[in-house]
Length: 416
Ligand SMILES: NC(=O)c1ccc[n+]([C@@H]2O[C@H](COP(=O)([O-])OP(=O)(O)OC[C@H]3O[C@@H](n4cnc5c(N)ncnc54)[C@H](OP(=O)(O)O)[C@@H]3O)[C@@H](O)[C@H]2O)c1
Image (cartoon, rainbow, N blue to C red; front, side, top):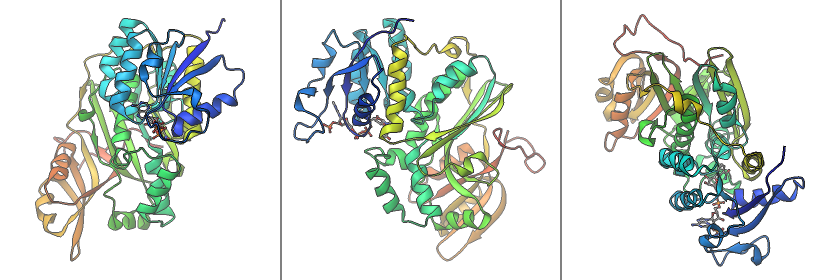
């Protein structure tokens, strides 16, 4: 098969952009070259000669010889303008920007269809794990039921360092930033937003429905405290930030991002540091488990490189499920088993929101409730003004709040 020559206009020369440049240097057989690099800061010292750079995006976008835009900047709004313009001009696009994709996926998909250009973004979900291409190709016909995963490398790194190595949260976050794992605005990672954006992209490829970021409830790791960390240690659990989605037979989608107690028997238990892990469950192939580095210059650049290489064979996502999917809706009826830590004065108030309480505890300043609660009630509690709360999910959750909860216990659909 004849391979197309790829001439690249690169946007961004930070952690991933420079990583890609270095990966290019070490991949001589690649039929692709970087013609120009657009960056922002005119005063920054660069690792390579000035002649490679421009500060004017149109110098790249107007260049007819450049047939591919690789977008690796840390500004989602600017990235959206660049990607949109590139597609309109018939240039193929490779991007790692999950925030930009999640906020504009529907529009970008119709734009790329209209202009008949590929838009690839493997690096946007779990960096080095080729999960999007697997969802596109392998699970094309198989009936995918659910996806559960650790999809954010920097929070997994922070959790590993704080819970297992007893380092402070602040120091672990600082280390994650130094290693290039964390987003420029770290609340994107620690608040669970980055994981939510990735989950939205995964859902589009897994189930063929494009949700809006607000459809997915997210709680991050920034509120985790000693009480729940000690609880996890006593029980032999780890705490991981989990992205979860499941499609029911009634055409409903469950989707949320929450910290979760992970038991030793769970495959995600051993996914530590900057690694990501994804469990897929489908009707025919049952449970499969993907693992790989979820952040950092080279792991992310390797996924970008793979997309560039795929472009030389004219590869593009077909979004087959988007074309034949039934009318899926977000499920708001989920009942979860959670550990809720709260300030002393909110104990009685918050108990009213629970369907069932297994255990509660109070000391002189705070307390916790372990019980079953609907996702909707959990949202109300987290919005309660001035109340500091922390939520950690247990493995069990219930299917329907109207059922007899005492009688019926369902396991998480993805289990070992
Ligand atoms: N780091 C990771 O592990 C990782 C993993 C997966 C995905 N990603 C995604 O990859 C992208 C890049 O992340 P990063 O970690 O490489 O960021 P980074 O190290 O902060 O680098 C950002 C780069 O973008 C450039 N830039 C910002 N605004 C620009 C604009 N308007 N026009 C042109 N250039 C602009 C900056 O220019 P200056 O150099 O002039 O400041 C810098 O070179 C993000 O979307 C991120 O979410 C990162």
